[in-house]
Picture 1 (tube, rainbow, N blue to C red):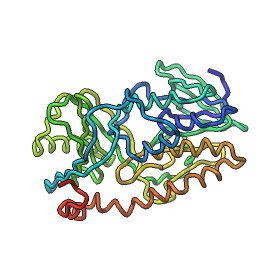
Picture 2: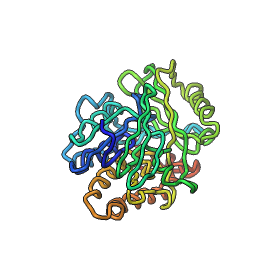
Picture 3: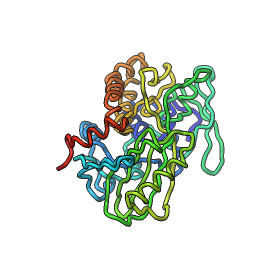
Picture 4: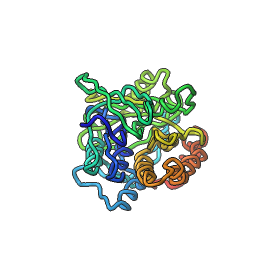
Length: 346
């Protein structure tokens, strides 16, 4: 590990990994992996658009990343009305930790990865001074010409870009727990107006089942527990002893101003930049696409302008999903769709 790099990338998820794979090898890159092995709340289903992107990049998800059972349909459950429908879906069921580790391994020799968090960022003359903290508490300072925030919602790089201004992007708290599988396998998307304005999920992986969701920050844990109790008392799902629990912030972009790309020397990618579906909260495909777009933009004289042009269509795609959201999250409209059976399995 050196004291100075051309680029420091904060975060080690899909946006970071794809950026590190495609950034020109003329740049020296330091990637900060601050996860320390902890699990991030994630359903762990790879959407078709993510699979398509990987294929375009001549990449194929390895067998050791994929897990059973296969996803044939997603059950939509409204806990308020008790209505349910199965909808055919083609997702890849995967181990999220193994997937992230596989992507991290695709980086070039010009990328150095260290297990450390960025705890402070200070702008000096023609460089950034980044204070790092390692898992054992050791601290160190490194410098760089460019800084990339690929550290998800609550990004320290995004906070630095908004320093002195209010960042009005809507956010939730995502909570997830893992349990031993006691019942039949299930892949479900859960809605419950009483406990969350958003959605939750119940997904099977091998001999385990994960339950998680997105909740308003105030009372998030209480509402998570209430929803879990409803699944047990009303739906009969016995989740049992908690094997692992995790939580994090999650964004929900609503307007163009929610997207923040950077300022010319400091940049954001993936969810840190606001790229996540406001309906399904699918973010892996947007993370990988923005990571690649930003890496390619570094070959231009005006990095920020080039990056903006490359991701403009992704911003439009996300904003269009606002018109789909009422049919998912308004209880009356959602139940009209469920009653109609449109696109549902017979």
